[in-house]
Image (cartoon, rainbow, N blue to C red):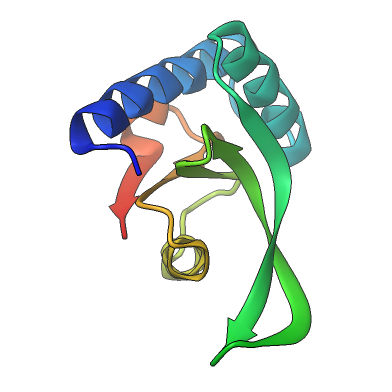
Length: 127
């Protein structure tokens, strides 16, 4: 498990990747485009990341046989959920919170690329 200092540094780098992707592409594209470009930008920054990572739903030790998929997992520590929507609805925050609980990861970022100011559309959620 990474300590808070490491997580903060990692989050700072991820935010830089988000800003670079947004500056280059702008708003209004589909989520898979942002996911692919984020993966490339994270790689350019020397970070290990996986996309569409399967999250099995386990209840009291029993795998229930269905899964969720997180958009991006960075350095096996931070979940990055990407959206390209008019408005972030409360269900998106709950989705990321549930992913954090199911995976026992310490931190997540929810990002909406369909906006005029991406800095205001990056939300940090701790587990």
